[in-house]
Length: 325
Image (cartoon, rainbow, N blue to C red; front, side):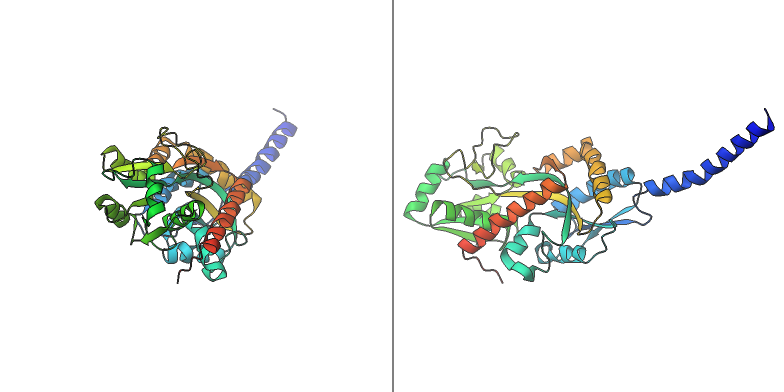
């Protein structure tokens, strides 16, 4: 080997050794741990989803990810924290539809604007609510019979609390049908379901995860799903649209959002990483167990869905004259 060739190879190796760390650094998502906010106390559905995602997402991004539970005010505490966080991608949040409902009900006093203050990254999944009645309710074997009861009296529909999706869903049904429907608030979905089972209320709007096991045990009857189309797992359950009451769409969803100003590069990297994470069998099984259907929407489509939801629930709050202190 000539001296000239040796020198050329050595120079090439020298510059390659300098460039490799630079490329590695450029490819790293962050040099600091990433905080994923869950705006609820530990143990709920959102917490379970976050802790299922984190090991896979951490591996895909090559960073440590910490789940931070910041519950309170129907997710407003966590959302307000995110709204004031630096837009460097190191602080994210697993949001659900409560992000929208707070603003629809409380306006600017919610402490954030869901459209202006956040950068939607990816919607991971959605879960429409179902109208459930007690199995023994002889005058409610289908939706028509249930609503007929409301033409001669008052229907009571339980929900998990003031301002919850079940609460606004019942108000939406009232507005669409013109019937006398009273939305009865409880301290959680469990007590609402219990009083439906006991016959203390006529029905409840709930998730498939909480209600369908009771349907299989012949304790509850599912009358209709509040979604644009039927559920793949329950193809025999009709939608409200199919039964002649159009526009009763009551869907929860879960997705990752960041502060406004999050770069397109960071957002795209998160989306691609979460695409891979969502394909993991354990993640799919965990979401299915919670009654969540995979609904991977990118930033633009997720943003459009949030705007549509905000418009819908603002109209329900205004037309229904809903006020919550």
